[in-house]
Image 1 (cartoon, rainbow, N blue to C red):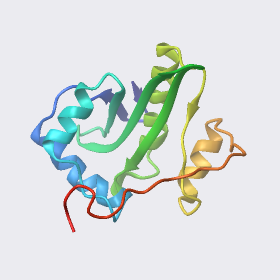
Image 2 (image 1 turned 45 degrees about the vertical axis):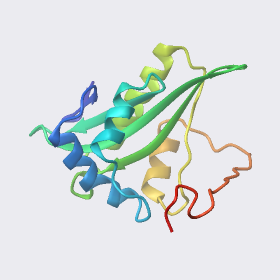
Image 3 (image 1 turned 30 degrees about the horizontal axis):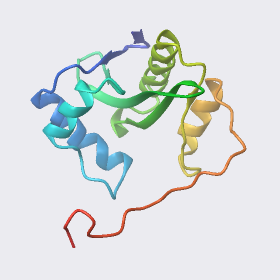
Image 4 (image 1 turned 135 degrees about the vertical axis):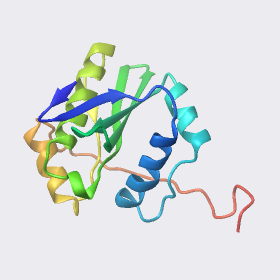
Length: 155
């Protein structure tokens, strides 16, 4: 899918370029999460429950990514957008919109009736984008359970 000079495609294999892109992009998304390792990316691209989309600029450089989670529950197929990030140098050039619309189209093709996402209120530009694309704020509570520190044997 191509939009405003940005091309979006599904990552189906892990390359050095993909690993490097995530080492550059994830710190721009979260200061508390390390970039995924090659093995993590391999698991993501091979999983039937996730679709890893990447946006490339006209030079072919990866400038953004998005993960679409697709999973079946008793009420139907659910689609959830996670970890949308566009490189600071490419923001405002259409990569975010192209990624989100590619995910929406993919979810629709798979049979999902809706697509959900969350976005921190501080991400003002992202929130404006989602609203402009037709996403509506839901009246719901979001709860999180955090694993205790050291659960995986670390301190």
